[in-house]
Image 1 (cartoon, rainbow, N blue to C red):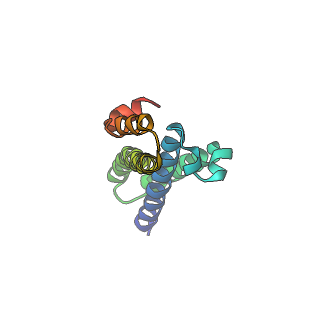
Image 2 (tube, one colour):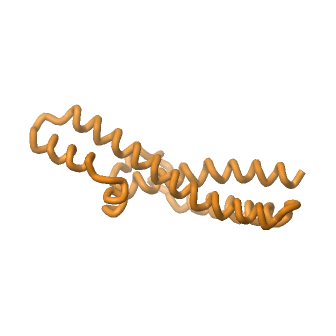
Image 3 (tube, rainbow, N blue to C red):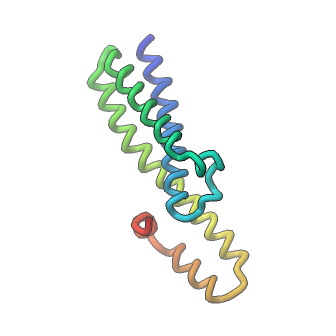
Amino acid sequence: MINIIFIVVLMVYIYVWTTIEKWTTIYRLWFKLSTPEFFIQYPKIYMYISYINFIILLIVGFFTKIPYISLSLTILMFFLTWIKGRKMAIKLYREILNSLLEQSNTNEDKETLKNTLNKSDNNILRSI
């Protein structure tokens, strides 16, 4: 029973943390309007929710039948959701820039947007 609870809490954690990391990254890339309004107003609430979820996951993982595997999986998911959230934000960032490129009228704007789109993910993330 505790293993099922662990899996459910892990799935909730993956979804919540990935979404919050995506919103945080896109917010830092200056596309605040691509995040929910409540997140813009109160970003710390979302961070606290994810921290509480992580703590619950650690506690439940400690009481599973094989705690070292559960805790290792929790730590692994922490890093994987962080990476996945950033990748989702970069994808959204590129989609927004592509739509801006299609709507831009001047050649200077188009050239700037093309240069930004040609940057690697790491270079985009370094700009935040």
